[in-house]
Length: 388
Image 1 (cartoon, rainbow, N blue to C red):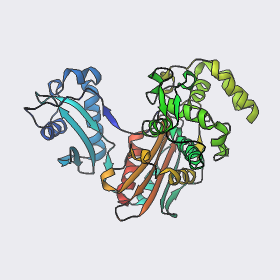
Image 2 (spheres, one colour):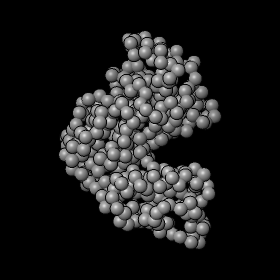
Image 3 (cartoon, rainbow, N blue to C red):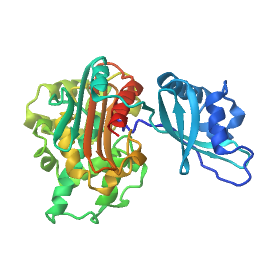
Image 4 (cartoon, one colour):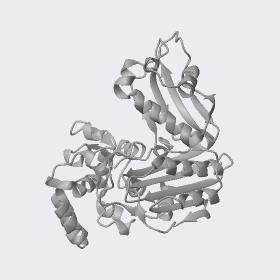
């Protein structure tokens, strides 16, 4: 299960030194206008992480989705690459010789669509789709907004809301310190699974990692700390509430018989099965990277429920660390959480416009086949752009 930050990231060591022979804006323009992409435009460290073929594939995908390249605009220290049918925010850094040492494309934003146009396009997607746009409390657009669908890591909004409630009553504090337990460690997304056991963390740090990086180990830590049943009290459909570790172990190919038992068990029997999983090793993450696996074993929420949860936590500063698909500079404030696994994609965004209007935009797509995520992101992003 990975986060639907839905970002095309080419991560390498960033080097910024003076006297560059090519300026960043010119290097970005060359990358998008000159074919084929040349290896000598990049540092060797960059190419150790990202092959030329992958770079070319990303650029081709951008042009296919957004049309012909138009121009590069500076936006503070970053850039906007404008195409005929939309734009993509970008970051780039060069070394002293003008070679690309860091490149980052945010999700592409198609030209703004009306909400009616967005819903019409969502209806063409295979499988099941839900979509909801609220302006304040008023419904602006809805498609299957009361249909529960698998939402992946977006369930972490319920974890955060439960923690926020416990903090409000004085039961806990954002400053509470805990030691990272080995039993909390899960698979990526996130990085905490690689940290040493007994590392010292605050509840605020765990929450920030859970939301901004969709860190699964941070999530399981918080579920154990605040209590599974406390979270279940605000989402009775998800009883028992799975930890991410249980999610992976139960769906592993080595546990198919146990999975079948779980499917046919009542709630108490399911709790016993989940307790037994604690002694089993984590599977390899590669089991979940191809075709969808047991999509009935998930976290299920309606778009209405996600917007309700988002409204209750959107004021927390940590909700704005990762703005998701929205261009944060277009809005007074953005809060975001998404979720995905193969066959599942959710994006839930709270927006405060510069004129003070507030929106929630929640979209979910489920299908028994790998999803064309870029298509969903384009429709969703264009709907947000239309609201702006």
